[in-house]
Length: 134
Length: 127
Image (tube, rainbow over all chains, first blue to last red):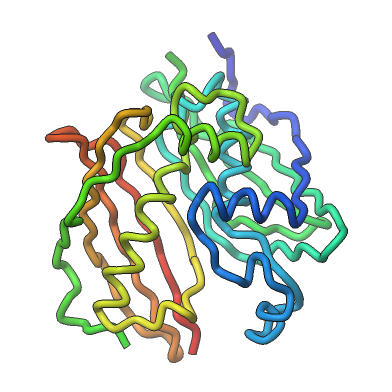
């Protein structure tokens, strides 16, 4: 099984976010809020442009944790605070960089502190997960 | 403004949600998760957020101005196709800070008597 050590840095992964992903996530999650698809509407409510669903960013972090843990069935707890929106302009691809560090190992589980940044700006705060090691 | 008297009350969804393989696959495929046999760790938000919306709108919150503050999941077992899930929602906390309404909703998803996932959504209505 996984031989994690406390303090171990996990390899960072880059995930690409573009408008087509926002549409796919909206359809998959049922969250059709127009701030995630309609530029005119997003700007009308004071946003700089269309923004990604916070839960999409968290879902990609969840994929990262699942990959680290050896499958989505290993993820037992998962928390994130949405501290900065991920702005997704039309025609461009935004790189979401996720990395992690093992912060504790106890009772057959490992805790992972997760970092998520876009253009070196943190977009998730206090993100962490507990994974099963068995 | 949310009715503060509703804090602590639990509302059980009137209907269960039957989880289809199609829904699990569509969610996992969207986020690039290669395993379609079980639901991705955050899949349950596709069930609970809509339930929270109904509850909070009926409780007086202006959903059109809601921003997601934070989210937590405790997963007791993964959701699989064929699960018939009942969502019970509890408004756990409500406070107003500098005019911002901050509400935390706990959503428990049960399959029969089995608690499958508990999740907490903190939602903010900005002043």
